Image (tube, rainbow, N blue to C red; front, side, top):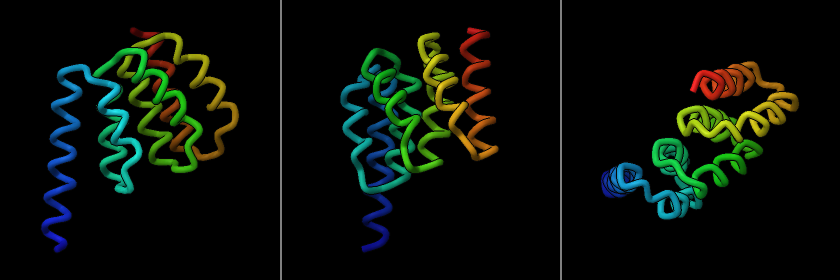
Length: 116
């Protein structure tokens, strides 16, 4: 049973990667609802790689997630996405953030956007 669950998660992550290569942000966003943290994180990373308005909108919403790992992944994904509009979202969240690792991730996201 556990092996089957692991295979299903792996399959979902492979599907997410394929969708990212095809720039299918709306379909990737469906995986954000998964109960599995690893699937959600894979979807967040893929949104940064796939680009588009759907990706941007979902990633900016995730910046205020209760899950620190998701906030960090979203900050990094926005840096990869390269949309300078994200700077204000990252800066706003940075001002509220208490976790040192997340503050660093948000700063890196802003820096990546300034370089791009």
